Image (tube, rainbow, N blue to C red; front, side):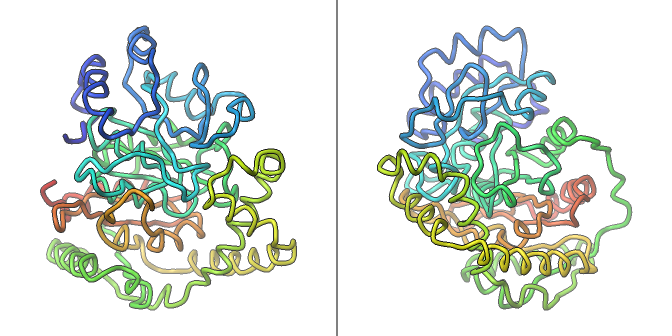
Length: 396
């Protein structure tokens, strides 16, 4: 199994054959008995996986939960509508952790079925990695695009927060929630961005960017395998002529304040549903909602002031692209958890664009390199990512 680039021009029927053959093992898609007839009825199209927190006309939205899907009905996500208009056809809904939180779905990692594909956009990352679709939509609140992309060995891109409207997507933590997508390569991610991002313009990347490496305190969150691989990636970038600057940025990150923002907003997003259906929530999600309900407006306001200061500090940094491990290590063994978002959290809190590119393997599992840019500089980030990806790519 391998990802398929948009440039391959694979017939739609071949993708449907792949889904029929592979998904009974991977469980990346929600079951849909009439999928083949529905998709085949499209006059043309590039197959698209859609994380099951986006509304799609003609398909129910369940968000990985046991709540009545009628609660989530509404207008189709405008991102889905734009992609349909550009020639995409929805191949199906992909599995998500419950409400894009931490309670995982059944999806397995295509590189080793005993390992997690990451979360919460697990089904989307696995579907692209297994060649079932060339593009799949995900979302990232803290790490749910970058991390599964790294675990599954594909490209995962999340634009600047708010660059793509998030209407029609069930909320988790609205001030952090960001749409995103998975593709086989950076060229595919840029192709989708040109459709998805209002005002997108092809960027001339100009001179090679100055690459910034965060403080050792941040990097120590990665395990020894990931840190060793990261040092090799940095060496390859230096050998290729890139200026790599070590910094003290992220020597401290107030994770507690981030958690207050996340939990407070999650609780307010779910307050009505939780009041009526608390017994249908999985324990991990219910605990997070209850934690948020216990927080006060003053707690939230204090955390938002911290974030404002952090964003100002992020905007004041003088590097072009931050380079970090995309995850603390390779995909953990087991399907009862989705891994750690620690490497992505600062860039998600900043609302900055970030992309994970494949960067070799360790122990038979993929590794990813995270690249994060200035807010609003999505075009330049992807242009640079295309160049950097060629330097750090290893065999998958």
